[in-house]
Image (tube, rainbow, N blue to C red; front, side, top):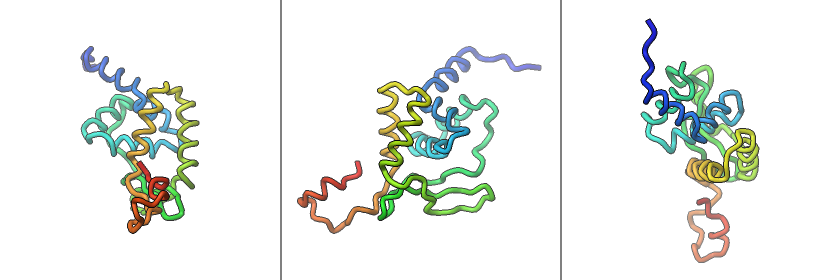
Length: 157
């Protein structure tokens, strides 16, 4: 017997699918940035909310399956953006380079935003989420004098 669909549940799921997060997840399913998008959202949202979004976007969703990113992004001393990933075989691999530089990451996300037709406001929200996803920058020298003009130039956030 088919389950009767709750109209409120239907509208809420549709509204979630229509957010930039929902559209980005849907487009990312078969796109190289998909794992980064999922990691960004998982980093920004509570776990229950992420699961609800995934269920709204992918009604057949039951669990996140490998491969996936299991950490937020970091920038290494060479300027590359990396994260820890769980590979298809279930092994965890650290320092998986995702982008060669901040400029590379920015450009790839700009093209992705064009592809999924984000509005200016949605782009702004996505890039704020992306900036917050990069949680560490190892290019910075912790002994640098904050009064040094280079200290302001190298600031991440």
